[in-house]
Image (cartoon, rainbow over all chains, first blue to last red; front, side, top):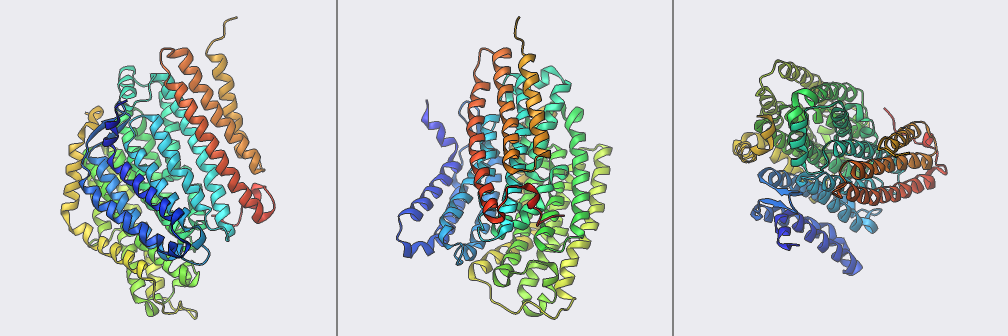
Amino acid sequence: MDYSQFLMMPQELGLLVVFLLVFLFDTFMPKKSLGALPVFTSVLFGAFTLANYFLLARGTAFSGMFETSATTFVMKAILNIGMLIVLVQSIKWSNSEFQAVRRGEYYELLLTTLFGMYLMISARHFLLFVIGLETASLPLAALVAFNKNRYESHEAAAKYMFTAIFSSAIFMLGLSFVYGLTGSMYFGDIAARVLAGGNSVLLITALAFVIAGVGFKLSLVPFHLWTADVYQGAPTAVTSYLSVISKGAAAYAFLIILVQVFGSVYSAAWEWMLYALIVLTITLGNLFAIRQRNIKRFLAFSSISQAGYIMLGVVAANELGLASLMFYVLVYIVSNLAAFGVVSAIENYSGKVSIDDYNGLYKTNPRLAFTMMLAMFSLAGIPPFAGFFSKFFIFVGALETGSVAIYVLVLIALINTIVSLYYYLLVVKAMFIRQDDCIIPTFKSACSERIAMTACTLGIILIGIASCIYTFLVEAANADNLIFGLLK
Amino acid sequence: MEITMLMYLIPSLIMFGCGVYGFITRKNMIAILISLELMLNSVDINFTVFNRYLFPGQMEGMMFTLFAIGIAAAETALAIAIVINVFRAVKKVDIRELTKMKF
């Protein structure tokens, strides 16, 4: 075996080095210095994120099972940015009294799931993809159960674990049919045989199973029932990870599978399945978000409807769609992490998680209220902030296809944006206008939390305006236009 | 009598159906876990049979089955750990107890 092919996976190797160093630090350093572990991990991961930009290997490894290309590189870099913010955000929480004994496990599990997501993104063979998917979702179940003192954490973990196994069983059943039809697990080989064999009924059934399996991970609507409970029950640091990083990785992998493997049956099979999923996801996510009182459940339903918008980039199935999908994930990462940063700062201080508790927050903690307001504006898509640009680009990418059906879909998405404005502004209204007797008192959030929130705020303001970012993403997507070979 | 591919596929699909049925109707978390295991194992049978009958010249399906068995074992181990955690909290393994968070 040619060991030099491992050089084709530099980002995975880099992450593995970070993981091993954190593990060794946690195992062999004296007890007294373990308090420095969260900072050590954050600094190390920050260095890795920077070093990432110099790891320029491109190509395939293991006879085509694994591919590093321009877009996988960019996607991993985007996930790294989100991961870094999550790490910095959770420094205070992981050093708190109850978590201090287990903080090593927290960081190790977090890095392991990120490794799984890397594999999902780069896999070009279904075996590697399934391994990546499981490596990403199993440690997450352990992380959801992390808060041993809270009952909700266990309940959320049980719900997450059962639905995760159920969805991966359905996914693998779909894969077994795909294998029976085509005799290969390589994306390229399957695509060639699907193209030659046309679309049989069994293929469409298999495709529906595959879409259902990945839809569970992305929490698209008929498969979303676990999302709100898990988001509410999990520790807030884990929730913020779950809502942005794992969703971003799954969205990119979903696009690759649908376009690169089943691209030849686009209009015959999956365009309409996705169409229905998107309409349901955006609409139901919005309607359920309106009636939530718990801020974490509220953000869960908001993230469900955001996943619907991300799927617009998949159904577009062109380079612009891919670029705007990546851009949307980046913007969604900073906006959602800003919101979760405020939520976790307030929860760490006072333990309050209801929207009503935020009444009058502006009076006592104007900076937190301001950050939350920017996050809500960005998630809703109000013009000067990044969220507006990401929604704009994803609509443009979808409209590029030129079919009337997609025009109607974009119209439905636009109407839903207005609905979402209502409930995002409810939070802003609570903070700025409504008054209450028991306002959260003025407090000083930890230094690490402030760093993370400042980074997110800068991201919300700058990412949309700095147009070079989107141009860069479009260039990366154009460099990878072979992905869309089947559709042309 | 010759044994054809369908004779494997139909039991395997029935097994999968039983797994889905059990997942939805069972109240005991361990029973739910057994149902999930049925589903995963029926997928393994599918892969092996497809490989053996349709593509006897290669080993891809068999390899996938091996990995799937390993992954299923890891999933079960973690799920049992979580069930034990829930049991410590509520002293039951009844799924109907997990109703603190809804809607």
